[in-house]
Image (cartoon, rainbow, N blue to C red):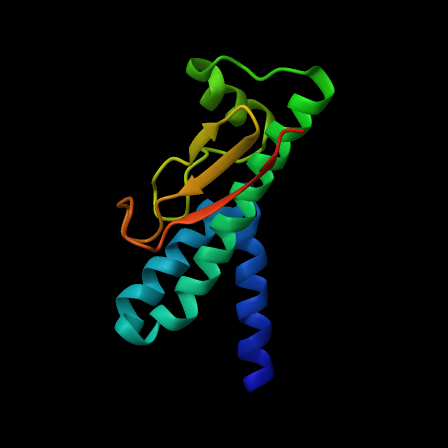
Length: 133
């Protein structure tokens, strides 16, 4: 039975990691939150955090690749549109429904999610990025 539960969790994590299948997993997440209450959080939250971190990393790598190959990035006002078009992140929102934040510096690119509480500077944010050199 434990192996079956573990297999189901792994399958769920993989489905959450693929943006195109994420909407199909929403009913499962909502059901688990409603039925499991606080007992579901230790299982669901790490999967959602992993999914957000993976997607933020993919966005950052896509922007860094564009910067290295073409030597430029889209204008800041066009950045979200560019990401939606080329990163395959669907609606480009984290698992909690907030858009990913992007900071382009002269030496690096940082992509972040506000995390489960949807508020900045509370310690549960997810940040990733890389060097532009």
